[in-house]
Length: 104
Image (cartoon, rainbow, N blue to C red; front, side, top):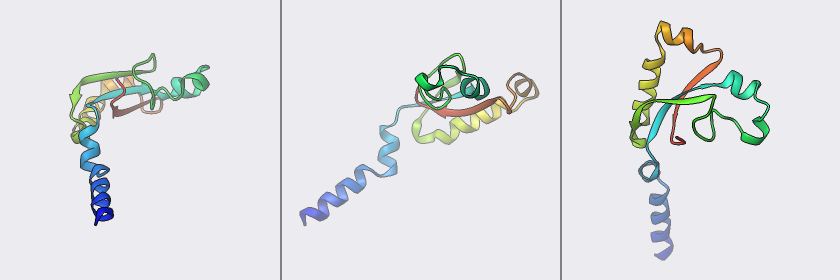
């Protein structure tokens, strides 16, 4: 009986809903992966600036915070935000990536 209760407890603890509850809020970002990864002499020391850390000269955050449980709202925001003629000209998809994270 103890084992069953412990199993249920840990199953609940690591369930997706609890994990989302524990996550910080997220923010939308744009990151120049072309420069940050392929032309970055410090990549070995700093790691991938688009996936790790926070703001850098390659990555910046836009908009407000989004609840981590609703990360899809954040992705919808950044997709709409970046999908204009002006934004695509300024941040072309062959050099820039978009996303949402809690590293800010």
